[in-house]
Length: 252
Image (cartoon, rainbow, N blue to C red; front, top):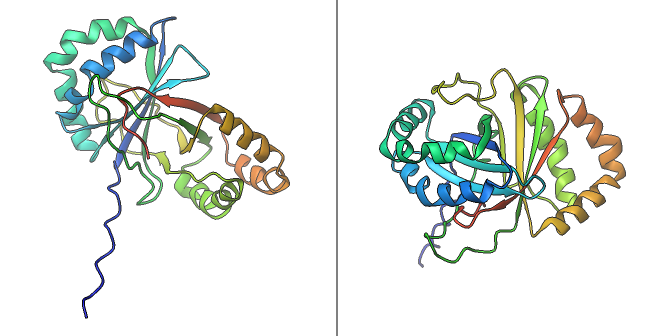
């Protein structure tokens, strides 16, 4: 009797180190930056050993561009960033990119909250190719009064994840602040802060709005879950509603 085939290998999870980057742009400049970024800064960054995970338009703030990139570890992050920002592609296009920006230092350096809670990036469209239906990615950012590993991560897993599942939402990636020092000081990150960030996918903004309204009416959420969350918070919750650009990888 033949043995059953082995189960399929789980999807590869990327990456042990992740940058969540949000740029504030001059009015009317987002499409200019997206066109330049998707044409010049995707494959050329990945050629240095990093991964461009995803790029987004923020549907609530037309002057904001958000993107994610990942690295195998902190030393390789330093090497890859030095290679790209010291290389010919950035030298050729940095003035055009920087001209679109008011600020580019709202950057969180993150790591997966648990071993398998990182991204599982899919394919991206080739230049000029047809992009898949993007959907809506919602990033929820909790700024905490202590490192997430000090108790918040356990609270999220034990209490908040089940409540979200009951409401119909299943986060596909969860991160906490990477505590290592910034290995590439030329690009500042938000240091001295503690964050927990989770990502969920919705079909569109209308589906998200319906879900948020339902959650807000939940007695369990209001009386049990929300108080357990808020005692950890250092600042108000941030909710970023993001639509992938045409050349973004699909996540998940």
